[in-house]
View 1: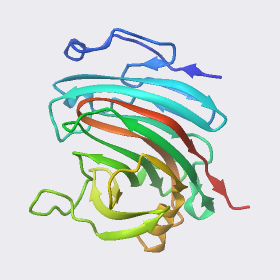
View 2: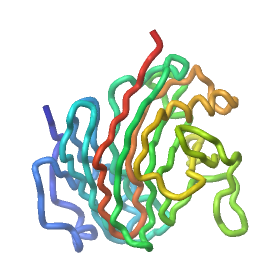
View 3: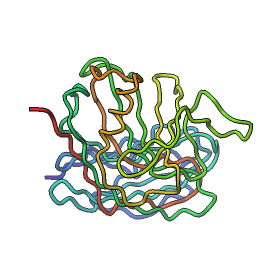
Length: 255
């Protein structure tokens, strides 16, 4: 059964100049609009919209079949090109609040497309958060990037070209190789795995491998708890339609 939190098409005047004049039953354009279905919550999440000069975003749930969900988001933002404006995402609500040591696997499938031109700035990523207690404050953010479109990870160290310098390179996980970047977002440590080659538009693998890499190398304690598991697109500037044609994530625990 699908339940929608609250819907409105009334945005501040600074954000309506290019606002689309359509609305569907499972579409929401408000800042914190969301819909819960199956094991997931799909969220619009315009968490930093006030940093934009103008803009909007609307997110739509298309369907869910078992554990597989299909959704898309349309967005357009201008101003503050280095600032993320929104994070349309699907969040898993089952199997979280478990210690990392109790998890055995996190199999996932993610097929997506993106219509933005070369000037668009955004990323596509899994976004995981850990905490020292089941319901505590976030201690670590683990981002697993599928794509980097004129964006870049938070980092402690940048090169002369302005790009983040990884702390480890060519890490084999889930059938791909990754560079690991480390930074601080003002609240918690951020670990960002970036593909070493190109864009991953069709992912199928066990994302628990990223957590075991961090625990195995002493970066995160296996006694911490996984408190959030999301996947979506962080939008910065430009105009785009981001479509997820198939997404699945589950968490398997030790007996």
